[in-house]
Image 1: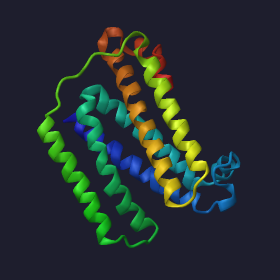
Image 2: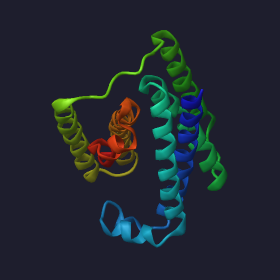
Image 3: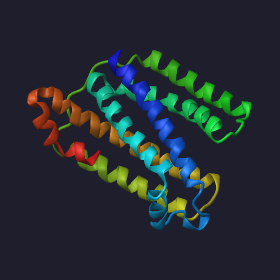
Image 4: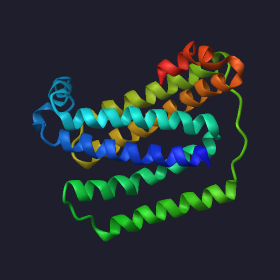
Length: 203
């Protein structure tokens, strides 16, 4: 239950962070999009900094969830971040969301729940060893570069979708790295093993 609780907290804090970051980003001129100067603009906005603070809180909650439960159970729970984000965004930005959007969210959530019940994931795999990370990191990096590179050449919803997919892949890799780092913490090495783990810093 601890892993489920902290997975839910991760989803909620990540959702709140997304809303705050989006609100801050809306104040930046379109000409600054996809430029390094965008970071400079955002760093001067308290709303964006508050969003970054919540990202850090979410990372801690995710670490606790992954340390106490299997990744196959913890990660799918994060899907509730989507409806939570939409609800918070609608309230904060005073935007009414169409009913069709909620149908899509409900269908996705129901599909995930049915998939989880059918698969019944269990167990808590050991830490990844040796050079197994190398192909995973290279392939993920290439895929991320292709998505972001393509996003640079398009605008509107297509850019949002490409960057959203890149973010999702980044989150997936981060979760795997975090799980590996936390496995070393629980493997008998304690905090020393965790702090000596490159996976923690890669996360």
